[in-house]
Length: 489
Image (tube, rainbow, N blue to C red; front, side, top):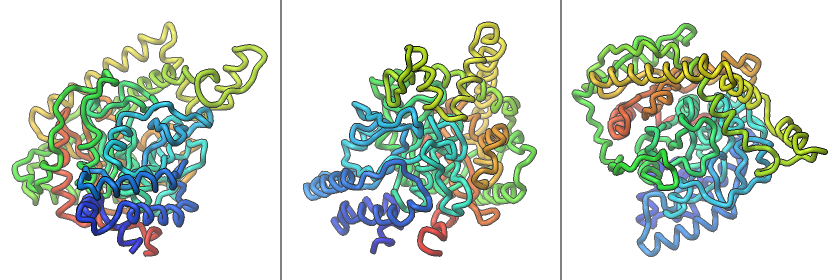
């Protein structure tokens, strides 16, 4: 029975919970058993909170007994450990936040809590969400459920691995340059980065404020739509959240994409792309055509500058955001004979090497004499990248591209070469630069590992993204495959 409950999608579990054929506590215990069995191998979580989760599950069962269940009532959810929660530590994967407990919930957490969703724990992440492999966590790396010798992607690798392994039914992550879509792709599940401003970021530990966005993971597009439905919407506590009505995302899942125009950018074929991955993507595009969509060549000529531009803007914003961790306000505080010595010791020992590298890059780019040459120029290029998308979306409804140029790589394979690591995000960063929504869906296998197809859409047009991703998913069975490790093959 345990494995049967873990195999359910959130939509299927919702129906069984509402009919009282299963209880929220039974559903939770099945996932806790999965966590106990697989965590020694995967390490998807920094904090598991079984007793808190059991109290929430009992509250959910009481609510369901009163006939007051909502979309996420009783559903086991994992939270990336960059989201503030009042009843569990928030570390952001960093030693410098060790022992920190937030006095408030992030808005997305509060919205889930209001529905009596069940929080199974806080998931592992690259330190301050800086990384593409979840190897930069101060709490050790997470491993990929499809092959524990490989990375799950990053920075939301813990959330992706937890959902792929049946340790949580759905999860939340954050995406600054691809940190939801790339790990979703490496772990063979669905991940959505909403439009910038669609989901409140109040209570998200900031990395790069003009790029960060919170979004959902699930094993199906319908699960992702259900979670987005709950967390989306304006929040007065976040001045960047947009006061637009939230559409019915589940109503968009019609399965019909006849007549839809899908843009295929020539610039998304880069040197070094795995040819086996490329063949899988070609097959996926051919299937979309069979389903009635029209494939339209488009050009995004400034795409080649997106990666370099990102690595000016994101570190610059990170260097400003991380200035607040000084040993006085939050978490770790190491003693010193002077205040400056306390700052230096705390930041020197509290931050890991990747965070220090990005702080130095960002501080340099923002320094007097270089600000105009680097940061201002990067912002101008960002405008050109967004303009490319505006012109393309005048001709097409969505744009399709690979999520990543390769399948999941081995642990340690790229840690000594940051530039090679940064290339993992070459296809996902442009959507962040333009503030666009984008979704990653499983589309096949290469080298016995998942391959992922990405759709990017117009601002706030998540319904069209979900519609095309759902139609593709329903025409294939990739989303029904489980890693051999999870159920023993």
